[in-house]
Image 1 (spheres, rainbow, N blue to C red):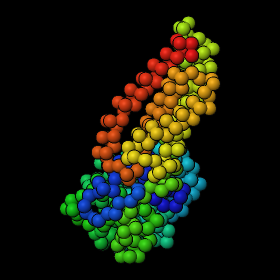
Image 2 (cartoon, rainbow, N blue to C red):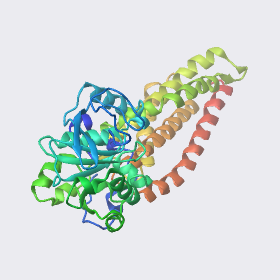
Image 3 (cartoon, rainbow, N blue to C red):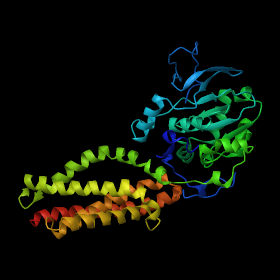
Image 4 (cartoon, rainbow, N blue to C red):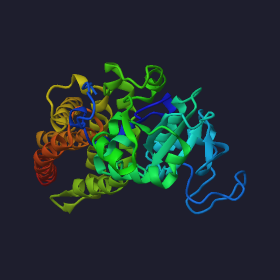
Length: 403
């Protein structure tokens, strides 16, 4: 499912929106959809369920309360609230620290006191997705079937093929789900529809797929309505806070590139009439660094915040527009310290970096389909490369002109 309590919400690159690679328009036609703005266990079980040991395929997480005996063997019962361990993990994942490894073992889990007639919810083994679902099930007795999506959230996993028809069917068989429940229904998150063919799931494992709501906050209402989704439950959103949640991850991804880029900016800034000047490298390098920080602020911070109000459809152009504004303000503020070629170079540089960073959000929104993302990148990257080259030429040229 897409989201839960604020601290467990999964996006883009979260919210499951942390890295969405498909749009509502690209969902399979197994259910109607309204476009919007858009683990654990069951490898080898421990011989003593309460022993704090780790066996192959199993880790005793803090969210596991105890184990329930079922016809298919012991199944962990999980909490429906976050504990300190979960919150720290959530913060780390939001910051992009260990995000690619923040997963739980695939298998079957229980919440409350599930029995043979309790509903079965399916989710990804990305822990934020799992946390989002279990938090939303407070007061409900249900089973949670966790797929092996390689630590990828639901929407992205469906686009990448890890939340797939075959994985659903094989996980049902591997967990002996047919021994645990008497019904033959699986509730899958709507955002997984791009990767799952409902009819084939039934053919492969005998379980019928029912498409749940986009957001886990609607689970209670969905179940109370007899597993019927309202139009509001089908709407894919990309609200202000859902966009803001993506910013820390984007900033975290800039860490390593920045370590290489900043020294390069200082080196380029020192090139000039005497071939290389340490004083010029320092003074002009500071201007280049300031331009880079403005570009990051424009493309990675401001762009997602004001996204709905930026004109045009292409994210690269939205970022370039913000970069142009930031470059113009910098040039106006420091017109007496910079010559025209330096102002032009820095403005181009800000536009290129801001454009590239803003373009990264195309895969995190419900505005763009996978083919749309690829099409924009094919057009934008050559233009961004040309702009970066022009910025370097003007910046270095200013140094040789005594700028």
